[in-house]
Image (cartoon, rainbow, N blue to C red; front, side, top):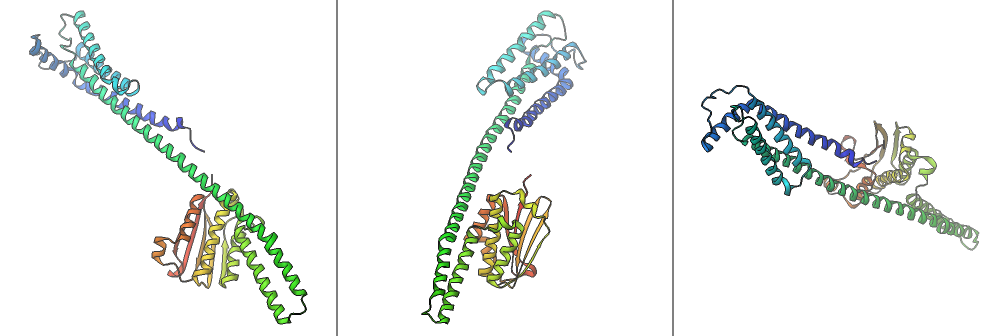
Length: 376
């Protein structure tokens, strides 16, 4: 189940708020430590620019009403401009907001000068407040840009997730269609070809003009053909999955391969058969196909004398290990992966399973590990 987009954005919004709060806290510390020096500097600039009383008498500034107002002004200017820019206005309006805050600072300065014309604590000019507003604007723009970039990345990730999900659903649908076609073909083989061979065998046994040896040979050929067709039917539509259950079906697949290739079988499962009931039909079918393909590779290429199959569970991970003592897979072939190995990887990826090809016990033969995580 996918998370609600609002739930995903909430922690990020909290991070933005925390970043803004950190900036306001930093501006508060700066205002507390340097407000009196800002006043002294502004009075010096005012004296040089406008001929107002200079700071000669303020060599060592002490706490005053002007310092308190300076602190409040710096904090409010920074906080207001940063908040408005970060959350309220677009990029085109930022400088307008800055000009408005500077104008507001000047108005407040004039009001203070009018109300306290003879106070030595008044601000000489609203430079510090303008700087605080400007820094707040830049800081808010940084938060806004970070948030917009994050939202764009989230939108792209969401689009990619949607595409991946659609591709996965398409692949699974293809697998379903493939399984349906396999079952139809297996049913046709049973209803038509296999029945025709049965009738042919009955008619051949009724012939009297053929020598007994010839008739026996013909009967053996027909029986062999019928058995081969049954193997093809089992390969196309593994009925054992329904009749025996997954773990027993794996063992049956391993032992059926032994009948063809002549290897010895050692099968051990420490997993309750019910563990595999959490998987749907497509998942169990594809897992069985992976085992089936591994057994086919052993029969065709490995020249093994013994094949071990271990079914184990580790927490929520189920593992099927198929180990033979044959000639093994060449390292270069494992790295480049033949068409058959790539096909197995593709099948595994459809159900979020993994297939690994390793060297067998005692650096001999091949070990195939098929792992899948149980759904929660």
